[in-house]
Image (cartoon, rainbow, N blue to C red):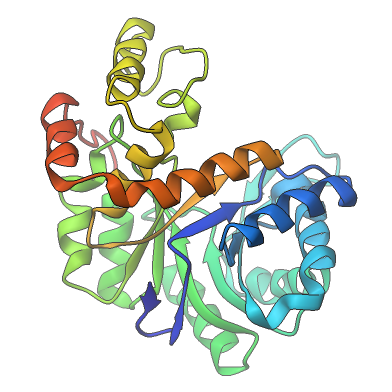
Length: 293
C-alpha cells in the first residue's frame, strides 16, 4: 500500500526483524526466505540487540538496498552498563542517532524513521522538527511513531502528519477500533500493525494470560481461530488488513519455517471473506484503552 505523503509503497506484510539471529548466515536465510515470499518491507530498531540487529540487516540487504523499504526506530538509549535503556526523544539525540543507524544499515537514507514510543509530555515540537530536518536533508524519506496511546496519537496528528503509526492489533486486542482507526481512516497517516498473531497465542503457542484475558479465555480464542478450518495465519492476516487505515502488518519471525508459514498465510488470506471477519468481530470481545485516552 502506498504511503501517500512519502511517495512509496510498503508490502502488505513486513518482516519484523527484532527476533533475527545475531549470526549473519542464519539471519540471511530468514531474510532471503522473506524476499522469496514477496516481502520487501523490513522493520528494525536501534534498540534491538544494541544496534547489532541493524548491522546484520544492513549487511544482508546492502546488495538489494534500493529495491526494498527499510524502517528503523529511535528514542531508546542503552545505558553504558547495559542494564537497560532510557527514553530520549530530543532533537539533538535524534540527529546523532540517525547517523549511527545509517552507518549500521549501510545506507545513505532510511525509508521510514520512527519514534520508538512517546508520551504526552515529550517535547514534540523539537522531535517533529528533527524528523522534518532529516527529510529535507534526504537522510529519511518518511517518519512515523510507534504508539498505542490515543492521547499521544491525537496530539501528534494535530501538530503534524506522520506517515505511519505503529500499534498493536489483533482479534484479542481490538482497542484501536474505538477511536484511533476511525480517526486515521480520514487522514493520510497509515497504520503499521504489530502483534497481529497475539504473540503466537492465536496460532499454536502454549497459552497464558494476555491483556487481562485468563489462560482459559486465551485457549478458547485460539480454538476459535483453529476451528475455522483455514490456516490461522491466513485468518489473522485477513483480519488485520481488513481495516482501511492499515497499510501493513509487521510480523516477526526467527526461522525460515515461520516465514514460510507467514507467506502461505498471506497467499491464503484472499480466501477469507468479509462474512468470516465479521463473525470474528462478533465472537471476540471489544476491549478498550483505559489509560492514556
